[in-house]
Length: 328
Image 1: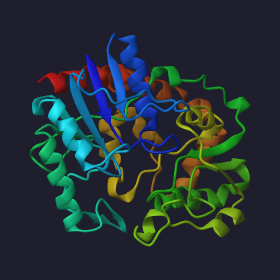
Image 2: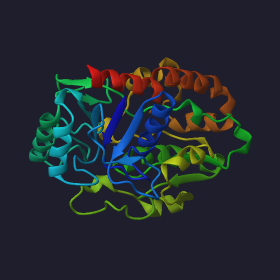
Image 3: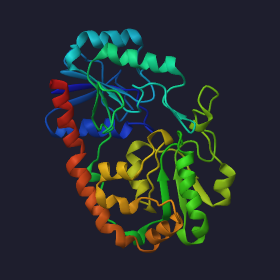
Image 4: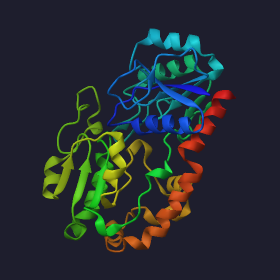
């Protein structure tokens, strides 16, 4: 099967990792995945404008429904060349909902933006999917587009780690979550070692730090980071993410307030044993200190999570499911 992905992809953010891995896995399984757009010589992505030969069109809407190459007219051309029943929308950030606001984090600026997003999705297909087990709208189904690649796994050799903690990710509504982790580190700062942040918007304004975006989208505190001795690194390409994460004993998972995780979320996605890795509300610094001092204690948990993710959420498994969705 040949799938054409329609997505506004940027190499150092968003779903770039997923774009790359779906192409690789598809080739290994005898399928083809191309990203809609004009071929780019220096790009790591496989672009193509050949829509006619596609068996299905997968619209991946993350931070925008706009096309990377083209406009709404191109959107109509895409829709005209692929039958409606072979079109799928993956709504990665919950845009296919009413406008929602949680402690400054939003999925839309206002209700009109929400209605526009929904209209575009509905005009393309009846197959709307979100990466959640609990969609808010009855016509939305579950598909976890962001997947896991077993080949990412590295030996858990803690003796060679350069950092006590590394976070790799851009600051898009994530300061509140990261600050929770850093506050927990304060009482044990001298015992943690180096702390690294890699990405846009931590010690300087992010490219999206503009008045038309909510301030919570790019909020930060460079002076606080300096006082805590945090080392900030510039953003990196998607294929450098895993090696950078591997430099830290601890690599926290920080979600936006809009998608804030709780124990049930962790249990559903990562499995019951992963609950031991959740940062507790009471005396969180003791959990972090234990991880730094006894990392091997958590090895079996990590191996179990790896097995669970490889079996249930690998790119191979997700591609098979996506093909079944497209063919249904």
